[in-house]
Image (cartoon, rainbow, N blue to C red; front, side, top):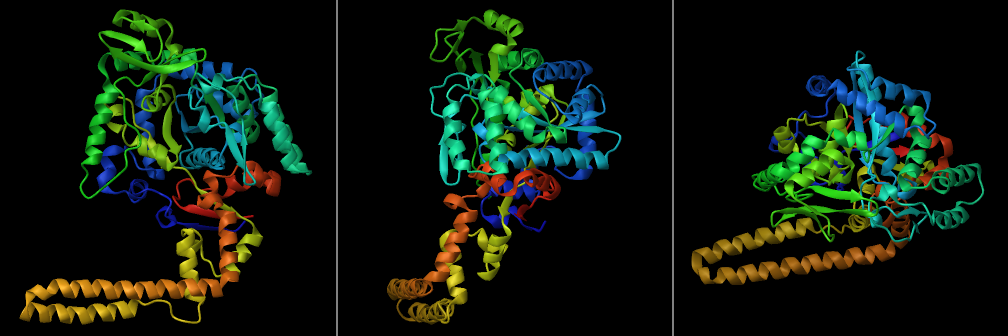
Length: 534
């Protein structure tokens, strides 16, 4: 299958923080541990091996077996769960929200990157085992972020009231979503598969966590993927010392605040801060409730609720009911690294940006900081679309340009007249340079007048250039329309395809070969944006 690639930086869709990280900028080195290179995993293995106990391994495997009690795991997945008991077994982890029907296409890319890296590491380090993990964000409570997916330009939405952790949400009402979605699928073998997958996942399971687990298992179990739900009493017991530390010492707040200050003070850099810590980065979790814990007036309490504790009472609550404490975005990565023998976290640019804020925090609590790897990104195109791009002479670099920039560039290229007035502008500036010199030698008060004239005449040339370009766009409107159409197909709503479109749209087209082709072609350590032609 034909593939091309482009650097993440050249796409124009990735932040300067991520681009600098991929280039191993020395500026960012204090904010991560080992860079994602194959040879660096040996050091990461040694660090994790020293800190991860056999007790934690046994508890992890025991919990996973319980979580898989009512799901048909493949032989590969079952073997991977068993392997986690062994001290030479490590995990590669990604995580995602419980978007209905997987949400955006990059859900697949995250998991495929994780599966492929585990496989690549096994080849490089045959004495160790590597298990791909998908962490379900079951404790999240932002329902508005997960209650829809985009299919053929339509938003398929699940409307219902919600409160508490999304994993515990009843799947009631998803039958109506299924009916609407089913009508748009049409009639084909692929459509029947999608209907069956949706109905088996969402109409035959009682809550969103179980539905998501079934769906993900159905798509990836054959590749040995292990799915984990962190909303688990036994696993939360491993977090108890860190929950207590958070409540008593505000360690994450102090450490992350210090890291943010250092990031903000980086010389000649301007990185956006992804998340800001609270003094206590924990929620209180119970049925239909997930609200922040705060410490005010000498007492711990739950925001917008009448639940409160003294110091002794909340420490007893942690000890006896750790499942009632839910980490937020700052604490969740620590929870993951405490309960998993993990080497690497694979995420999108936004995720990695907040992980960079956490390195000092991990150092403080003495937990190895994982390798951070940007997930694979993919643009899927058909052979027909590739041919259209070729006929329009649109290169890989061109297709990622913003629409106006692309159109202006291509109109200049195909126009039979020269619309680039750069030479004229250069000549004009040279003429004014002579006038500036003359003013300096005669009367300096004329410098302002010269500057005013220069600005006026340059603006005049630019206006002429814009008018000529606009006229050529009209003259070449057929080519402009074809360029606009093909870019709209590949970049819906002028954004990356992977951040917008649901996998079902591509499964309808490519069927059973979709995921195997992703498995075959995504190279997690290559660090390039892939264009995949089906």
